[in-house]
Length: 309
Ligand SMILES: NC(=O)c1ccc[n+]([C@@H]2O[C@H](COP(=O)([O-])OP(=O)(O)OC[C@H]3O[C@@H](n4cnc5c(N)ncnc54)[C@H](OP(=O)(O)O)[C@@H]3O)[C@@H](O)[C@H]2O)c1
Image 1 (cartoon, rainbow, N blue to C red):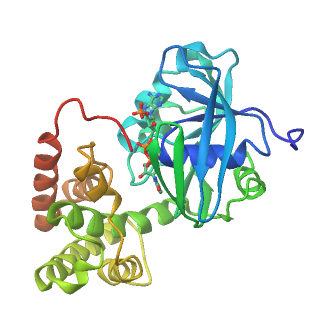
Image 2: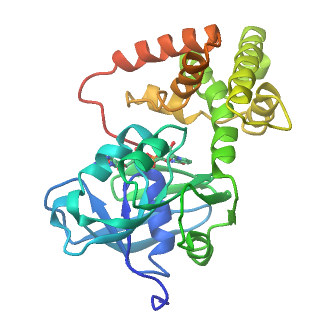
């Protein structure tokens, strides 16, 4: 173990992605999982299942209310809708100048965290790593991908080197907001359509009505994101079609959440586009209709199914 260089890294959000990241980082840095308030066993015996191997590791953990040291370096891996509340729950245990790395999909939660914690040094990441949990202590690292990290304010901590040492292909980026928006425009097309129509990603290309919906949603997303100052080399529809083709047999994360009765992450994806539309007085009828359907799906969940996968 080569812990000398790194401070204690806390990770909040011990779910699918968080546990995969934790398993890598704990090999190179002192890592501590922050769980929901309460008493937890002192370690989580995690099983990490990869392509052709499985390994186990012992990750120190405690409830947010049981932490024995201030949190100075934190990776946040909750869903976007939980991000702010999870940080708030740390209270004074979160050092005011803490270095934070936000790993949420979508846009919106990052701005809320920046506003709430103005002294924190905040970076954000997008990642194409893929993971899902089959039990609270077992996570499948389903896809190896690229993680892009960039500062949202005056962040000065070298998250990129930490992630690289931990074994994740990682790139530093100058404009992380652009990368978040680039991912959002694909997610805003593929996720809601596959969740509502309960179909695989590839079916968006095979079924003419869905292909048409993809085009219409893409055109609206292009206009809205351009109004917000984002420029992309391809249209959203073309980019989403390429992703749908290369992941044709996959079930999107939103489809998986809907099927499992879990809350969906729509507010910071489709909701973000609708916020732009409202602020700028631009029409977005297709995304609006889609959002209404998503909210219906979300409110049809059974009240006890709020957990994660
Ligand atoms: N999974 C992937 O492959 C993947 C890939 C790229 C990006 N992402 C993004 O990464 C983020 C996390 O996704 P995920 O799939 O890892 O979600 P997840 O499996 O639902 O994990 C989120 C974890 O956060 C925990 N949490 C929420 N509020 C908390 C709090 N106040 N205190 C302590 N823990 C709290 C949840 O605990 P409970 O279990 O108790 O609710 C859950 O374990 C999302 O924005 C997602 O879009 C995920």
